[in-house]
Amino acid sequence: LLSRIKEGEGKRAQMLAVIFSALFAVAIAGLSPERMLERIVTIGSAAAVFLTAGCMGRSLLGLFIRENEGSSRPCERVAFSFGLGLGLLGLACFLLGSFGLMANGGAWILMAACTCVGLTGLKGFWLDLKGLWSDWRGQNSVFSLICAAMVLSCCLLCLPAAFIPPMDYDVTEYHIHLPRIYAEDGIIAFQPNNAFCGMPRLMEMFTYLMFSLGGATPAAASAAQAIHWGFLPLACLAAAALARRMAGESCGKEAGLAAAALLAVNPISLQLSFVLY
Image 1 (cartoon, rainbow, N blue to C red):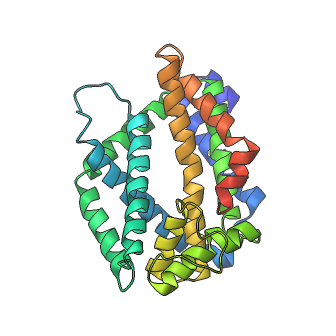
Image 2 (image 1 turned 60 degrees about the vertical axis):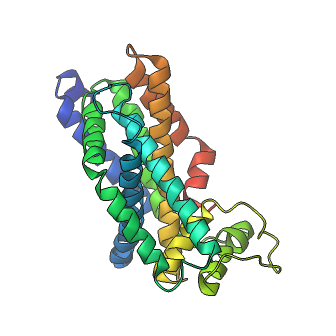
Image 3 (image 1 turned 180 degrees about the horizontal axis):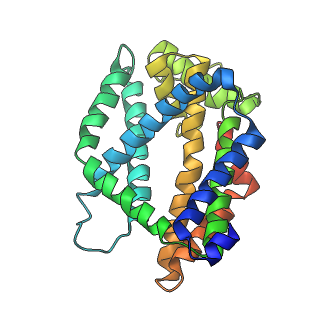
């Protein structure tokens, strides 16, 4: 890999780094072949929620950012689009669930409405993703490739762990149990027999969404954990965008990748990425 970089074959070196990181993650974590189809469906469901929220956030972000101003970079727009869309989706789940409107197909109607809104921002979101990929392809230094490989390896290593059933009391009684009760009852209401019922309901709303869409099943819980895992690469992208803006044009790209790598290898980040907290 280093010899190819020295020879100037940047594109091939980047592809080798991606392939090496993927093979390393699969070899260490070990994806089960007999569960492959189930996991593909689970990851696909989580990806659909993420992409719908990202496109919806981009359509709303377009109301505040003009394409010809050049004041924002693709990495910033992608991070803000995901954050805005996911925040609004979680808030909508809470508000609709509080009035009992998520039951009887209400969750599917919500996702259909979010998809319709997201279609208006699909083109801008796709252009932002292409711009983000162009920035990545422009990084040929050894330092940049090492940082990118660290981020990709950490994210891929944590993904199979998201399919492990949680055993922690806090997770089973709060982060999964309460959304399951809400989905089964059809409404978000006070639960006098659960000490966690007065705690914040943030990530729990995505668990509630998956339970409302697919029922309170282990597969829906795995999809919720996959959504939870998606916040690790999203947080790395946000850290990279912030560090790049603070560092300036001279070393902004390298600083962004370094910030993303430092966040990805943080033990707390790794643990929280696959545990449904």
